[in-house]
Length: 189
Image: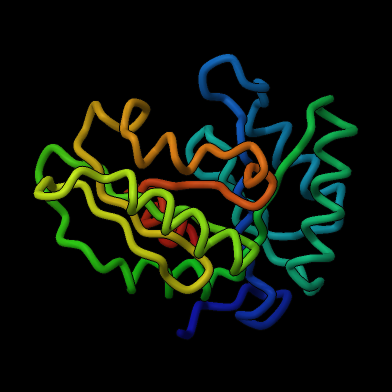
């Protein structure tokens, strides 16, 4: 994929940071202006946030692992919570979205559950798939660095598959985003 590079670097420098557990339910509350400022103070440029659920598009030459460590430490220090951040290249997000294997259905949500560990990806896809009742419209499959999941609206939190993905041992390795949100992230650049 050829994501547009910002003025400061190549398309490989364009990254997406996905924060887990902010601004939903009783989770940590973080203003997007503060999140942008903290990200810029961590050395990133061309920082944009998308929605208020912890989606940051930025430019930075560090590897995904290096940037993750820097951002998690900065966010934990600044906002006082146990920050969990998935950092992906913008190209990787674009590829995951393009590879979404299921037909989008009315009254359903389409999710990409990003994982930073192939063993966790396989385990979560297997657990979620085993929890789905046969013959329904809910479906799950493993992708490259993610799990794809289509679930009826209103069933996300109560779904057996959704509960199967909630293994606390995997929390550090996973974060999910709705396909619509991912399209908005990609539109930012």
